[in-house]
Image: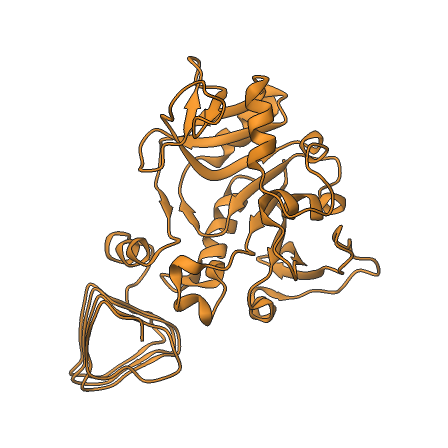
Length: 318
């Protein structure tokens, strides 16, 4: 398996107002967009080409990666819209725009021509993970099943019920009336081309109905991947917590400008950001290029806008 689909078209409502400036997968985590962390994890497992769907603020993606020599015939989506090719770390990245959100199933069906006849790794764009994705890919190849889900044993949203072997999903949210959930769906899974035939063309639809159909017939594969980290960073609390607890690089980027008298405690400051002398940051995140004024006292804040952050704030997005 050498190709992956990054789900990037969501509205990011749980991260508003941050997502009023950037699509959720472009929100920075330790100076790097969330989508790039996902792509790096996929690349480490052998992925060589990527597709990504866009919807909200699609122009922001034009600054992601680098321009490519556009082929004479790019694969259009099933919605008839042309795709756009970029280059990310030497790998092809094809962007498929969705003027109307197609959801997870519709988004997959839309890129069917791009997928072709090879299996595909699907990765939610707001998931940070160090799970061994190569094990997921190998399990899918060995199973011969249409879909293999990467699952976790621990977490809050235990919606999946597995069979005794742990290699099949028997029910999802109890909708088949078979069992209560015991495992968490990671948002990372593999599909074979035959799965696309189960998705209706031209519809806005989730993958869940097709997953349930497979579960009913005992053909929805699973592999338990409890090794490594797995974080859903789709809400503000998880986003700030990740910056406090993870060590994914320098907390203060070398290209940030920090005043001599500024105090930065358990906070992350992005490249090009300016923190004036006298400012105090605690458990906060300052996005690239943002400014913090000398009178600022910020606790558990995210500085993301073009306006300088000043005054005393706690738990606010500025």
